[in-house]
Length: 226
Image (cartoon, rainbow, N blue to C red; front, side):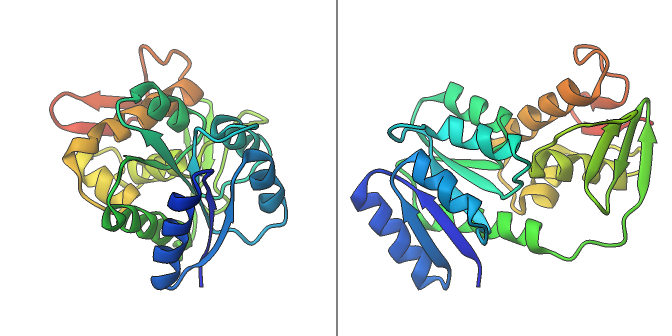
């Protein structure tokens, strides 16, 4: 049974989320602020976090930043307000794996949670070590290094990089990446792929504005050039 932590200060929404998730067979913990969320995460055992960004005290952005800085790779689905595009982008840059915009449908939320859990809990094949430029990637340990320095990638950033590695230099379309990395098809969310790719370039390319390895193929998708 997967355990989900819901971080939401609206008591009605928190109750509704817990009720629906428990009906689907998940174990659910709920907290109403960022301090309590970080304390619960330190106890371990959480498989996924549903995180409202606008919570009192330590807000969702700082919760997310603290998690990733501590090396916590638990997948995070953020809840954002309608029309707050900058919040979605900032959350993804801080290491969120996906987002849902309020108000949202329960079926949509459940589909995204299932996709995240399926990706993170699936048994991975034997890993390989891949090098491009001064970057070394170990797909078994999910470690990325530049010379001796470790580079921290979010779970979805690493999965996206792995999908390009497995393509072995061929072009992978945005829709295929949505399916392989996020577990569902949604062309309207192709910007999610673009946002994660921009972060990969920022972390891995010497000059993100003129990438040498993580290349865009116009009207086709992306490919990795070693």
